[in-house]
Length: 365
Image (tube, rainbow, N blue to C red; front, side, top):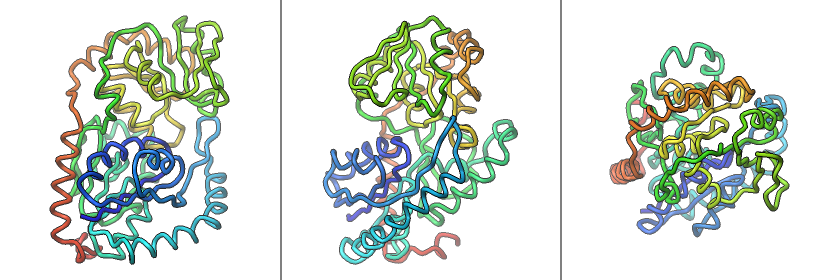
């Protein structure tokens, strides 16, 4: 089967998840990948036939999405990016001619699917905001962000053949053609054996919290910090704080032996921490509802805590409740990727039967 796989480049979680899925698909099918941003570089190192496209990005500062700057940088990017996307679109529709499209929140692949009248399978965690009934208590304090995010997500991949939604929490469905599956986990996480440690694993950028080092130092715990200082080539030690350049193998080692995790609202790291039984303090980007809902459900399930800011009060309250979080995490149903991959294979088989005739009108019947 010829499969076009599209991956959005904003944030590395989409690329990591797609890498796991592509390991399953590439040996079985003829697969072409289109990806933007850092996702393209990550996937091109691992798979053949990965094409670079331009994609939307978000601008951040002081742990907030900067809306005007986001608009401006995307307008600038579109001037040079869209002509290349148009050329790739023509090649994909005419030369590759996919029979099925799989999209991890990526729009060009969706457009190719609609042009070819072939089914599009959405595979991401974002669609939970539109396709499930979120708990009113979770939404109440963030209703404006929720309504905006839901409209954007609904418009992103409308009329897909099926929506596979990765999640560690399971709200009731509000739309058909939707299946919730456990988070996709890379092999390094599945192979990791968690051990109790004393250090905090911290993954946060300077843009996400310039006051974070002082708050971490106040805990008195050893902290291994990734992302905050991007200029590093080796560890930099400041008292009990160790700033580290990114290394996938060392990051996994620090995660599996951590006492707890302090990070933003990234779904990928949150899913990995939950799988390994590591309590997490989540400080999502302000007004970024997808990160907010991840953090709120993490807290609601007892797996960790939500905080608007990473200050000493939030860290102290989180550390005091570590035993409670550990007890809640002990009951989490740990699985491998079998649930998702079986569901994907089943939907691909069903999609192949209607390939060439799947239209938006068909989707909304």
